[in-house]
Length: 198
View 1 (spheres, rainbow, N blue to C red):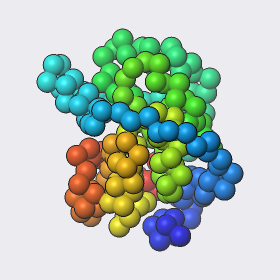
View 2 (cartoon, rainbow, N blue to C red):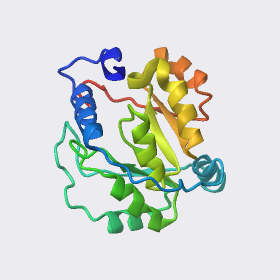
View 3 (cartoon, helix red, strand yellow):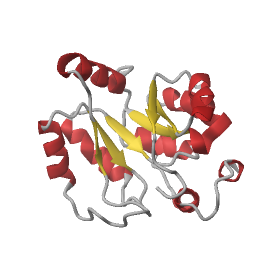
View 4 (cartoon, one colour):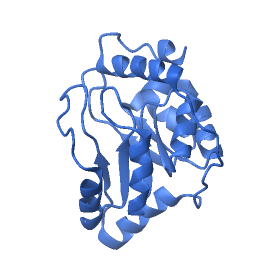
């Protein structure tokens, strides 16, 4: 499988998250309905516009927990947190969708639409079902982690675009740059965190 091919040490936080997502995929039931299309490049445009107007652009993240810190913000109100981000000038929102370790949900991504800022579905995409979930909850963009997807990154980017999602390709080191290039990624994130320990 894709997770096995990624050759991520079994003891790492990343491996534990990915295996939890494999289990969630087995239970996932998506109700088919028309995908909401966004104007092409909505997420990227918001970042570029903020940079031009304010000299920089922030993607503000809503996250209630993590594998390394546990439930550090459990119960934080999505509404009040996102309202503060918007008032503070955030250009876009990043909403955690992974439930087991990051305490996120697709419902949170959908609810964030009330704030009229482009949303990144931040999960651990290892199946097109994740892309369907991201599209169905109205996200404008989706995170694709090259450390996980490797040579499949370009195919996932193409599948994301077919669903009206802008792929943001996350790189961890220079060996992964080619994956972003092959995916024709215009949005590239650099993760300076150790993906084994978070």
